[in-house]
Image (cartoon, rainbow, N blue to C red):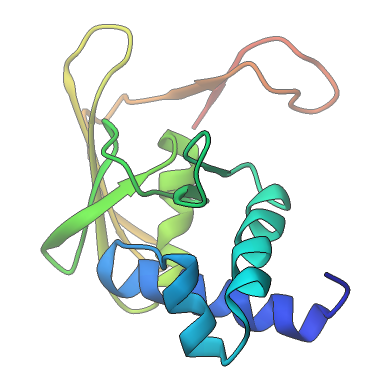
Length: 154
């Protein structure tokens, strides 16, 4: 698909529904909403997901992850203004949800993957109101600053 305007509309439409409801479109719904053919919508879903670190459920056309959201339950439970219903793809992606929900309080609750204790982060836009426990840190093995060693993210 070479039509960048259509890809942009598709991305915005899919992300808008996920932000609103925690659910993604089936390609038939996307086709109807965008006024395009079913096969074009099905291909669009695969193309848009391939442009992200997301994925479709194997062997299907169903969006499983559309970063920063995961459409299947994960340990990263998210509430927006006290309303539950979202899951984040990973702990770091969870922090990006605040950019998609301006002016709303985003709360992320997850167990520590090392010890199982509860971690909670709450924020509204760039204001961080809760970090429990206060000494919570995140780790990544991704390259940070040109070095692949794990480093804490504070």
